[in-house]
Length: 222
Image (spheres, rainbow, N blue to C red):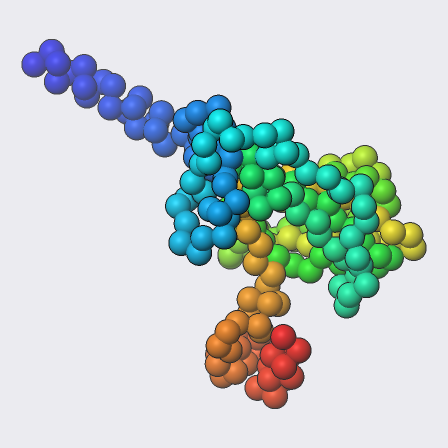
């Protein structure tokens, strides 16, 4: 009977403890490192991450990337360029749950609305001025935005749609850290209007409350 009373007393505490536990990163590594082998990066069917190569074959280059000081090519319709440093560029990131990108912006260039399905992003402005923001989920869909200057930092929570825009007349640069070795990116316009095969124009016309011809014109651009 005494044991039953102890369980009853502890149950609320245990429930509170487990409810308050959160996990916001890739699974923790069970060893010093798990460098992804080059052959593993090319295999279409993957584990949750990549298989490790023999630790005896690991070299310093497995943990290194060069060239992040080089500007990306912003000569595209968006006026922006993203240089990733994920597990695809540094095999030693495998299982470590972190990555980064360099983002270059031409004057008034944008990184269009998108989200990362597997990562929170923390962005630091290196040069220039950026307008940044993210949108909360339904039903509020609240825009939380700010103008950032050189040295400012902003966080985009995992899974929320966000964007950046250079509001200056000079090029801008930012560095972002992401809480996954492979954060992924889903650009809203590409996902909605560039799916393969196309989403039905009837569905999109109703969703955006526009004529089907307008939907078709946008789809042709993707």
